[in-house]
Image (cartoon, rainbow, N blue to C red; front, side):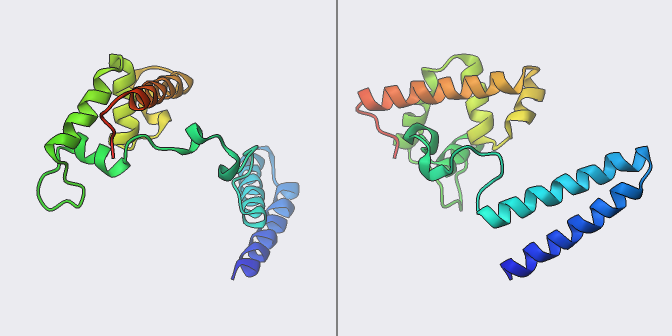
Length: 159
């Protein structure tokens, strides 16, 4: 299946490249997007990792791989889930999350909760808050760093 899929994308790429050569200026913009999409998928399928990444996830530092709070628990905290959810929170777990979030600035907490509790992508968070995507990334990195430092020095471990 994988080999046939790659072959199908390569055939689509050749068709798109031929169409690009015959197209006028307006159509070339659209077709060039198709060509780059095909090239992206082919590279991903052949290498097994996302194109453009300098390192695979296995080669990243621990702080880049770890999630400090279980995403299901964070989502249950934000949604205040009670009945019927496999991620129901005990009062102790709710206290641990509130304690960790209380040490963050308002903007850090807002970005962290939107990203890890509401599962919004950084670009959407940036649009909602009227800040740049880079700022969102910085706020979330700072929040994760603070939570990590607190967890290492605290008796309250989220888990």
